[in-house]
Amino acid sequence: MKSIYSPPVSARTKNNHNSLPDSLLHLTRTVLLLPLLMLVTLLFNNQVRAQKNTTWLLELFKLKGNSLLQNILSQPDSFQYQIIYTQINRDKKNQPHCTNFFVNVDRSRYFNPASTVKLPTVLAALEKIHTLGNKVDANTPMLTDSAYSGQTRVWSDTSSASGLPSVNQYVKKIFLVSDNDAYNRLYELVGQQSLNEMLWQKGYPDVRITRRFVPMSEEENRHTNPIRFIRNGSLVYEQPAASSKIIFDFSRPCMVGRAHHDRNDSLIFSPMDFTKHNNLPLEDLQLLLQSVIFPASVPASKRFRLTQEDYTLLYHYMQAYPSESVHPSYDTTAYFDSYTKFFYKAGKQKIPPGIRIYNKPGWSYGFLTDAAYVNDTHNGIEFMLSAVIYVNADGVVNDDKYEYDEIGYPFFNEIYRIIYEFEKRRKEQSFHTGKRFSK
Image 1: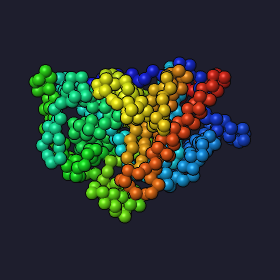
Image 2: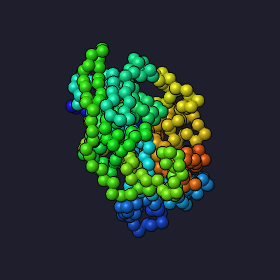
Image 3: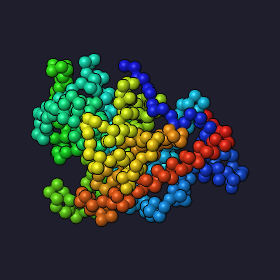
């Protein structure tokens, strides 16, 4: 199957960009004896294998950040933040070239990925659809049956225009409001074993998706439902129930907090064990998003087999707002436009006209995570920004007492503001110098 790539239209029509950040330009004034390329090499060598840090980016956040960000940056062990800024430079043919810069990024440091695992699950589901024959596509009604303990069936969907569930409808709800049931249904469609093996084969060996977002045992999550696809009331494809035989590597303990509430809401005075939970390192999340936004910039082996229609579907819903949806129709008091847009979620801010954010966030157990591509067509600015932060002052996990509003969302807003202003200056500088990035 031939894939056709059609990424979002670039924010930049004139791409006279200086690819070097201001901090590097400043350093060249003080280190006159070092050639520029050597200076760049030295900075990149500062990114050690276990923990990746880009000196100038950390200094930029320290220099421009408000007091809240300064406090967060001074406590990396408490807030466990990780940041990836992806600079996008386009060549003379308008092709994007992406370069990552890091603050405190360490794939061995566990954080709960929460709903960010919905992104690879959506991509896997769309790829799988193309293996089911030409009578099945993302719009074909999909009926989920039950065959094992804990499973539930879905034969209708009152939120859809047709009244029937489909992959398209599930994808829509996942990106608009991060719907958990929609994720569960796509998890069941792909199957636990197929989902993980697909990700590992594509070069994401550290990703682990072991569970639905509903209370279930480890064994129940290994079993996925039988599924039927119908068209005009007739069966066009039937998938039997599946049982995962995959062997996960749970050798590295993942403990979080100093205490936690168990399923019975009893307070247990020991860390919560996340060893067998989902895992999605921030670097992998960023690359998965990049593979959707700029497919050609990612090695073919790490991409999903998607068609033009798939990309169109993703681009539409990844940047859409709940207020723009008719089926489903959302209560915009609860599901405001920045509900899943962390850079503007603090104070339920309005997102300025011309700015569209293609992203997938996650929030759970005190962890906030977002990976996003920002496209400001009014001002010709585009970049990617991915980050995670842990906000749990009392150290008790699963008590629903986290500083999301006080610290978490303001953190995302502040790092976004700094990068946006940095990109704005970078654009202005490139306009005046007439320099253009070339690979």
